[in-house]
Image 1 (spheres, rainbow, N blue to C red):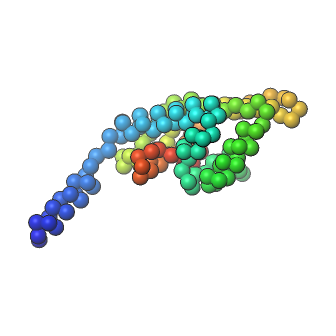
Image 2 (image 1 turned 30 degrees about the horizontal axis):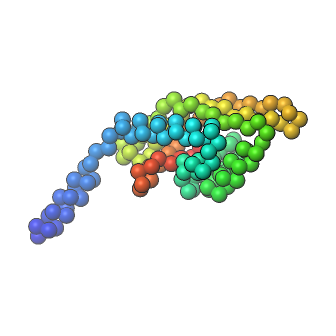
Image 3 (image 1 turned 90 degrees about the vertical axis):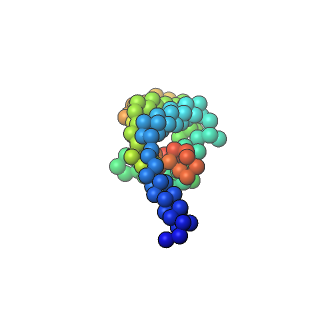
Length: 144
């Protein structure tokens, strides 16, 4: 075996053995979710879209599935057009895979708006989001 081939194999072996700091990644994911909550609560739509991956999906209940960034955008814009609309959540924790590229976070949240007759509607819920870390090193939600 040539020294060049041996060097390439050694490098590949070292790269494959590189360990992921799961504690740091967990902290990074939790911070990303907290940042997302702040952006969503403030209604900053220009920044909001960067928190979902291109093929993301939102499950509102067992019958409603919103798949893909364009449909998510339409859903968010329609939701925000409701009188009195508010959204907030508090991420409480996160876990990350040993590979450091998949994770999930959880917390508690609240959505509120006014019905057509002016009656307040409020939904309090537990939140769970599944995240994937992109090639750019940024966590993005893939399932909500």
